[in-house]
Image (cartoon, rainbow, N blue to C red; front, side, top):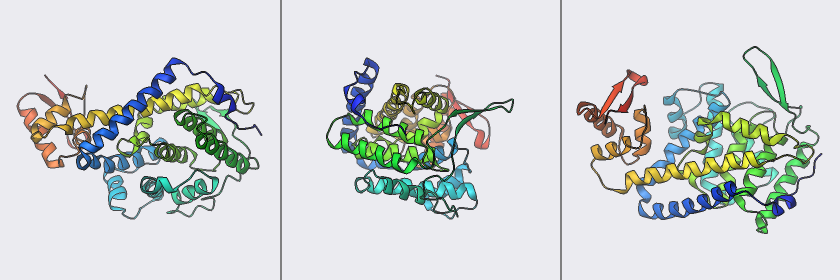
Length: 348
């Protein structure tokens, strides 16, 4: 089994792109703290939106889906799941809520990781819930012609418990001793976690829960207001490409983790910028029509009613619908489609 240590990371010289991303994230994080003091009530409404999006997107990446209505019912009302997919979605919801509410009381350790995994499967009868894998797993790609290719072979079941313990200890040591910048240490930990692939099922979703947990514990709380999982789902191919590039040579300790670090930092920075955009819209006390008009100016190309609702957390659904109808009547917007397929784009 490869040795896990951050000593070479501590000595590494980082390129201008990574240093720029880190500096920008710290700047945006400081601005977020200022924004939250200005409009705490309005911005608190972003939390429920982010929870819904995070639960939906993280599961959808793995092909676990249900309707938009059911997602909202499962997340907001904690309604009982109806099928296997909804059982998995409800479990993710529960694990995410615990991280949101108690991140400062959840230190990084194998025991807590196993507990989160068990919670994620708490609505199903999964005998491996909360246990590391008992069979060898593989990371593979399937092609349209039916061909399947193994891209990466994670650690064996026998090696997994010790490896999980080691990456937790190394991470806690360098963070506790201020040896490595958290925004460097977090992507490296998540990358190692995905290379170990410690569970039979749920590794991708667990990695996203742990990303949120570690960011919160280091003071980067943007994921509470803007869904990081949603950002990853929007650029799923870039996520897998960065992970694939960074895995080469991992077993030998010769991997280049830079593509994955850059991908994750870019995702975090993009979320902070989304947060700033939403603050700009709620900053002024404007009538509903003007608030929605301002939100549409932030959209390029086609957008949905849901897109505008997310940008206007202080408005009700009926207020957004009324404002969009008025903007269509005045010729500022064009409406296309019907029912759930309805979308809009600007004419001016």
